[in-house]
Amino acid sequence: MARPRKSRLVPSLTTFAEELVRAITEHVDRSVAAARQSIEDEIAHLKRDLSRLRERARSANGGGAHGGGRPKSTRTCSERGCGEPHVARGLCKNHYQQLRYAERKGGGGRAASE
Image (cartoon, rainbow, N blue to C red; front, side):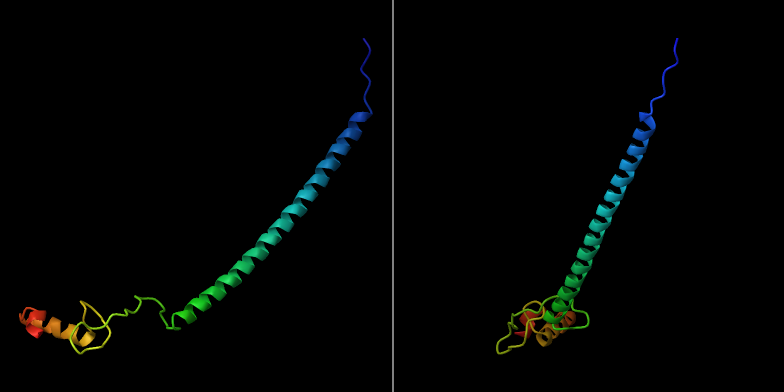
């Protein structure tokens, strides 16, 4: 039986396949690098926007040191003739403290102060 002939095509196909894989790999690497750079640029842009929004929020809140807390009420004290801002239980800070003092002394609260 005759020995099979070696094909001269196999080494050239192997070389072609290796070159094709190398070219595809380089193309994919370039595409990934471009996409990554685009994403990093977008993240930097979003960080700048977020920083600007934080500054606007701080200035809109009056620029206070803490900037948090409960918003101010627009209600006023329920005592007659008092126009001070509401603090708790429908009263301003002074009338609220008077109510607390009366409650502690056993006066019964608002009924004692009216």
